[in-house]
Length: 132
Picture 1 (tube, helix red, strand yellow):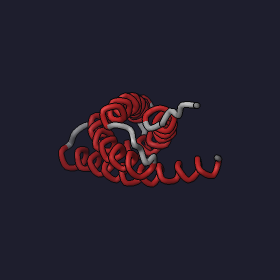
Picture 2 (cartoon, one colour; picture 1 turned 135 degrees about the horizontal axis):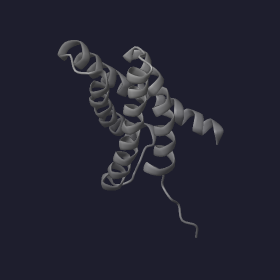
Picture 3 (spheres, one colour; picture 1 turned 120 degrees about the horizontal axis):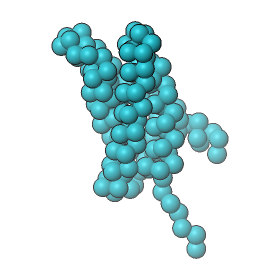
Picture 4 (cartoon, one colour; picture 1 turned 135 degrees about the vertical axis):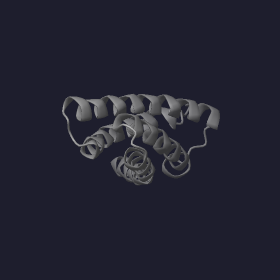
């Protein structure tokens, strides 16, 4: 059981790396190229990362057989909470603590990673088995 959980977490983290490339790429492009504020740019990046994340986790990490209608809805709730956590932590890091936006984003990403894995494993993509 623990080995399966660890393998799934490693796959989830790998998918997260791909999602983070999209997230950070858009964040940096919006801040550096378009001079958008880092909190708003991070939120846009998080939305792109969430789309990549759902697509890959549905098929690769959790091998889901749920109908997309159910799993997308649940994933959207999890992603919305993750986005709220991301935005709040970026605001704390950048505005309150005056930390570099990339350092703030790395810390934020690690915290949101734990939230997203737990919520998606145990709620979004979980298949309820009936006894009998």
